[in-house]
Every structure is written in structure tokens, then in C-alpha cells.
Length: 97
View 1: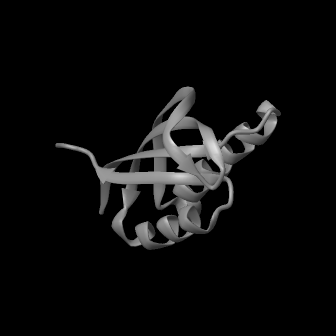
View 2: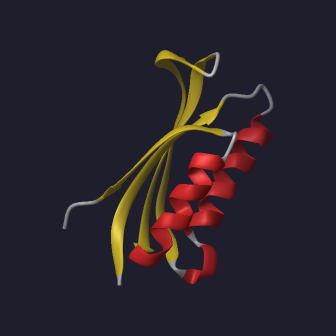
């Protein structure tokens, strides 16, 4: 059964905009993998200063993604987010009713 989730993540900042777009596309593909999820809204917050340095990064590219995801697909999605060198931090929460 699919539920609504909000996925906010910080992509590693790169001078080349295409690298950031590829990271966002990759995360979207992970969400939609195996037709177990679908992105309903993608909100790019853009470059922001981090509260503290993470992996020698002081800035990051913030993205907020709303999606309907099957609960069985969550472990694989979180695994991919944790292992990705291009995603600095992420927060996946179940959206309100």
C-alpha cells in the first residue's frame, strides 16, 4: 500500500549544474524504481549554507520531493541514499493525512 512521503535531501554542491541535475534525477529514479513509487511534486530550494561543515562542504543544494511510495520499497531507497556520495544528508518522513 502506498503512502505519501516527504523526502528532503542535500545534494553535494558542484559548479556544474548538470551534476546536480543528475543527482536529483538519480534520486527520483530510486523513488520510482519498480513502479513502487511516484514523485508527485519536486521543489528545488537551491544553494544554501549548511549549519555546520559536513564532509568539508559548507554549502549544499537543497531539494524537497513529495512522493507516494510503497512501504516495501523504503529500505532500498534509504540504502541508496545512505550509500550515494552525492547526497550529503536526507530526511524521509511520512506526510500527514
